[in-house]
Length: 417
Image (cartoon, rainbow, N blue to C red; front, side, top):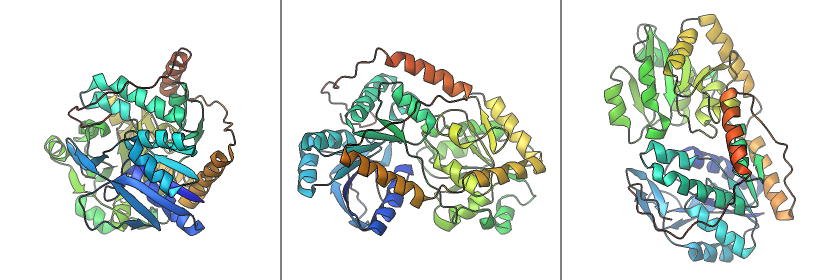
């Protein structure tokens, strides 16, 4: 099979999108498929043009204002169309499409090449968090038009499935994310590392992720004065300085990867994730694979990953007292915490990347053959998610998606149209 992957972001930037692409590339390389990745350029000259057997075609790009390690590809549809026409792939994989992906889905459509779009980032909701609510409707219009044009959209969670279906996007199926249960494991727990950050035997409360506005890490301040605990923040990003000032007693490790990250996650007593805009949340799955129970906000991807009163707790979005109460419940009860951690570990068994990547290839083959997607409607059981689904489903009855106006956006976020 000949596959073109259009990546909104890629190496050297490591995030959820890049991580997923790398795991998929490993699988495609093992299968012997031919793959090209189209991605924004980078100023890092040490980055290879070949990654896991795939050639990386870099497009000129500019850094995103306020988030300089994220780059936005320049150019129009015609440039992407020429690249795809020359490569002649059997299918185009759109990885978290928004800017470059919007051009690619148009180009592929014009060339008659089938497309599989991976909905992975709730970009429109970021607009309000970044103080740009006037762009939220425009961003949803962009998302609608990309996924209405794609032959198939794959989402990682029930919440995302219902969210897009509620907007009138019906060719949507589920494709979750794998987890490396050999790398992330309770066996990686290090007493030496734990003693280095909690010398008096404190219970370690951990967070892993980007330190950016949309992650709402500042909400963890409600845990700062819990007796007998130590807060550890793993990750980096534009909010780091502000968060270090707001959480002076927390341990900030910076970005970690590989076995170092696995050791730290296994060393947590409890994992917390306050972000409300996760379509999946891979770090929750990695914590669970490490035998660590989770307290997360009850919206988005965590709804599918965390089972209340078994593998962790989900709190109502914005209810920080409930967050604090659930954390207290687990750090104060060793037996319950261990039981939750054991259940969390059991819940992620079988979710390996080879299994998930094989499922993705089946979706490729289906769109190439023109096979229709038949997916039963899924309404979530969690009351917060169910209410939101009912609202968006009601709106969908009158939704008439249209081509977005040709505009040039030069906002402080630097997003081209």
